[in-house]
Length: 158
Length: 158
DNA sequence: GTTGAAATAGTGAGGAA
DNA sequence: TTCCTCACTATTTCAAC
Image 1 (cartoon, protein in one colour):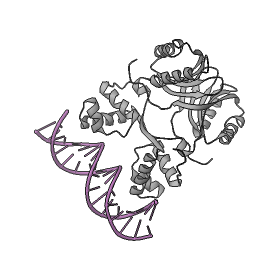
Image 2 (cartoon, chains in turn cyan, yellow, orange, green):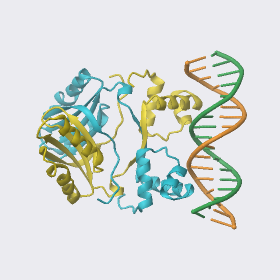
Image 3 (cartoon, protein in one colour):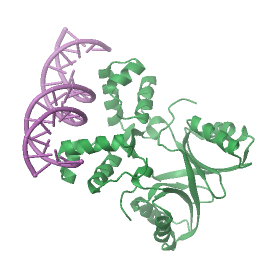
Image 4 (cartoon, protein in one colour):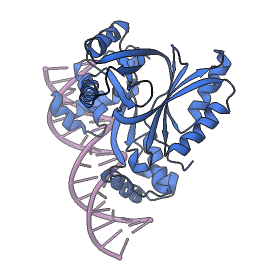
């Protein structure tokens, strides 16, 4: 559902909720100059309109033993619909795959992969790439620093 | 603070909260076999221990007019500490940059960029790459399908 | 230490002026 | 919009395991 018209107050509310979805309506209202009830009304509307797709907890990777992040560019053997779809489903079903994008350019897919260590990533490459006859090539980038990680979207005009 | 020991109940709770942080304690308790109060206590502990880093609203890109996603691999002119740090700060401060990873391999940085359209991305490349004398090269992949997008981490052993 | 039950406090939802 | 009330959820307390 595209094209939901949002005013500056909605933007301000969404900006806050993208930072911390647990911020109570009263606090948001004080910041944007609205009553708590009005803020709640707008949030409810944003939720039912699908602007707020979901509200999730973001975990600290180190705290749950996820030591390593990888960015993998995957090139498929043939760009056939069924081949691509199969890979898509495989990525969706694999818990190590945090993100998967189907892209133009040299690569067909770009994955963000989370693992506890190298051996786990090794097992991942085996089941995801080597076992799959349709993967021509993949290049791995080991993440040394997660400089900026989030799903927040820019709400400003520029 | 790494190394927080979590039992299977914590894992189950976290799995649920990674899906939907608004799930009430009673529902989680019914699923994992715990009272609402016990679940609430564990969630509080997970928050203060930093295992739950944050709780955020995830917006629908289309609903807020973000039509395009790009994955950009950036290669810097020189791998000097100050050059890398400057770029890091620039990425952190730019709202179009949703994610930024400092990586090994051919590229130095990999960015996930959100824009309303091509012209906005064009403006982004100008201010981020062309204006910066230290960027040697960058390759852009246009995202055609966001197959899997999230920040959920695998909590299973394998 | 953790747990469940009950009581208290806090937050959200809906209506009326 | 503000205010008020009601329902729901979270948090604390306490006794027991």
